[in-house]
Image (cartoon, rainbow, N blue to C red):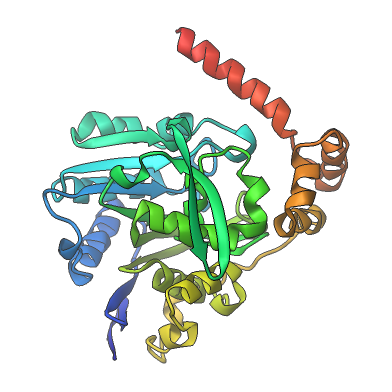
Length: 361
């Protein structure tokens, strides 16, 4: 059964009782964003998931130390979400893990995105760097794959549900990164790139452990080009909310003018929950082009070498954690031009020194 509603500034659909809504903003002003998120909350009946006793986990996209439009969740968007939810729940825990290869401390990224100002303003808001939590090996079978992954020891007690707060952006390895791919930052190991070969299966596993139920995509600004860290910021003025991670990403990829059936992690996520991508897409209105913004992906030469590490764990170890790592990075830097890449071990040395210095203060 499906149901579709359409108004001038939004479309709404239902797939298997999982609702979604896409809104087009007049502009990216605070007033319009807040009005849109309240509308999402009401239209999707999030009061069925959230009550005064609910502990919410908010997972923004902090893939950079500082805010970059289209690359990370905007501080304004995050602030408005917290403002709306803080009066409707018991506690909000904003969570993220350290940057891969020790690129940055997630706590510093949180500070630079305004998280600690929110903590001062809202008494029930808390910050958690999940890379600092004790870990435990977890096991799960996803689509006939037996998986083993270290996750926070008491992940089940962290919160009642997780809301993913990603942005619309393409990804030179995974095609797109939306609500599901945003969960990869919750793999606490800084050398998580060694697990890229099974990322399409690990993502449903991580979603289950953190109780990922809702998605709210910050589409004020999207990213085209060589995502997820490089490219062109594109004004989208689009916000998507959904009561299901897979439905959110299928519709989200469609908004980006990308076929979700060509995105492996979305395919595996849908397979795990027995969803058919075409049936989700069939809930869309015929005339809805105004809600779409093409975020075209452009790969650089080194991306094709990176793809090898995504497909093979053995190659990943050679590239990121072996005696050959320095020379491989030297070659990468020749190909990348002005984008300098630093080997993980050197980054870890800098990371540890900075952390020790901060702890002494």
